[in-house]
Image (tube, rainbow, N blue to C red; front, side, top):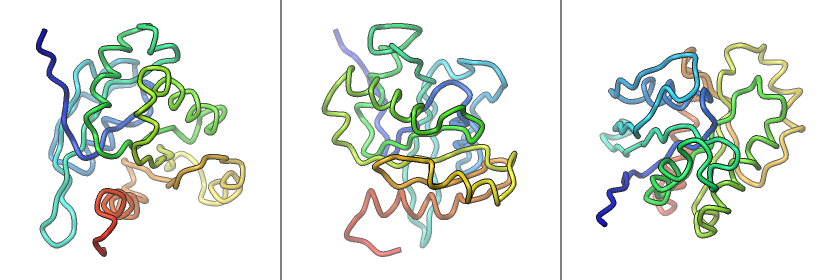
Length: 179
């Protein structure tokens, strides 16, 4: 059986409504459906991120993953297979999550259970929807986020932190190049 998988430089990984489609829409010309209900995205969407000095990279909005997706829960296996073909994985967890670290670990575990090789891919965490909290809160919560990868506070709506995030993604994809 022939199986096509999305191929992109950066794959967006997160639970439903984590802000994946909003991020794609805010930094590319892609027009994914954005709504406040789970599984708005049923197929991956691709967008080209314009970067400095006429450079660019491809970003894939992977439909939301849920806990136990590796067992086929929800549309998990159908979504997880698209993650295999991305050079860098950008995890997205909203700032209003009950436990940012735990959500990241659940997502990471789903990838590990699906295909342990995915854990070896470069990873970055974007904490989304930061426009709904005060900047002081971001400084207070920063020490509570216990992850082993770089993380960035962003808001697609307010366009906050997006330049820093794009810089981090570029350097992760191209470690020999300078910004």
